[in-house]
Length: 363
Length: 272
Image (cartoon, rainbow over all chains, first blue to last red; front, side, top):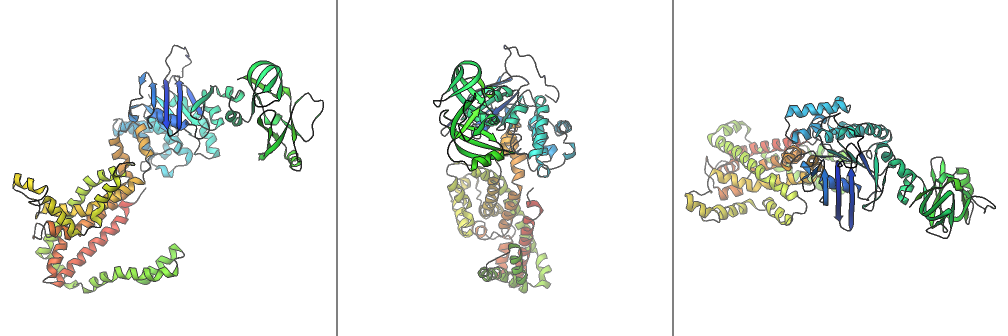
């Protein structure tokens, strides 16, 4: 399938078979990875998770580079018993892994050549992709003469030139410096849906996930812990990892009206509105005030705790306070002046959060 | 090859070479260089052209170039696959196999010749049935020269290629597989080009070793003018009657060897 031939479908009838259906299980020493993926035609799925969660292993298992038990069906074809070279899956590696002895043209033409196209036909395919990804000026360069961003585009072109049904990208932005990263990210957002019939992107960066994904799977410890649209994850994180990623405090509790009893302690959180049953409460560190004396007659949530960590973040200072009555460490952002005041304070502090600032979503 | 400039060369790029190392280094260099200087000093330069063009020399030089090249080709065809197998991680018995394959590096070549004779001679392990069947035995033929040279030269090639393979990022082969390349296609288009520096230097060393082969050759193939008398054997034979000719021939071998070593470090062997 060539450039521009992909149908970005809005047809989401449930009866339609997904482009990719995979139920995978990979065991390595005492680590067990078990995930189930479904990808619709034209969809970009992001696997988000901390280092060591097993994200890259999912990609390698899909591509056939590590043995995995289970089932993989791609474009209506069972491929779990098929060798890597016949799966029709392109993989873009974090460090690109361009062939160092081949020119950019020959790198991109490698897939077509390997699958039996003639030299000239393969070169023509490579030329089309170089035009498409703005690489024509580098056609005769070797990978060692490319910048990080250029190498990334060559890796993308090389994977796409093999006309795969599915494109996998392993941390596509990790090897790039800050400014290149920004540009490549927006390029990827534009191009990804048209490079193959679907794409799975692995990242540990929430911004990548927000920009690139139609849907996000969060993987922790070899299992999927949450799934949803990027905005949904940011608003309603269900794990501490995800809450931290999006800069939120996450406290699980049990709601009874507008009072939520913390799961981890004897304290409670007062919120606006009424809720029932198991919930997660979230609030931003910027909406937490730190007081050195217990406030009186305040309508806010007030908890006492001990400062466990102080760390500057940009023009703010992040203060971590262990709060026994919530059974959690609460993150608060204060000004450097306030932080200086806290420096000379000894003993417990009080945290205050307005009920209006606390969001609630079901557990 | 002046010794004074040699010392200066050591000092400047390395920076601080401990003083105590300089004296042994100089003595070591002298130990290697003085015999060569002796050879140069004793070379009958005026007679060199005559020696070179004499029938015996031409014949043995031609035979040496032919057999050394054939031995290198055999070593390439068999040694590269052997190196690929040895470089595969987790191969059981790889250590033992590597030791056996590289033992000719440390074995006295004469012993290699005796071993070859025991295996391939008219009464040998494999030679006997072949002789019964065809009436032909390998020893004392030009083919025997090639076998003897391959035996001593192949370890250089295997080690050179295996070392290069170990330095290769295996994930490049993964990348090739995801692009639809079969292992065979990947071997030719990725693996071989990337190990080229090790392959070339290994092949050049193997060729030079084959060219200089003496002990295994004279034991296994004999010393027959025209069929098995290679240049080193010609040197040995001449030495018994005509020292000047032997020295002249040695000078030729020295020149060829130096050219080969320089070439091995030159353009062909360079990485990307």
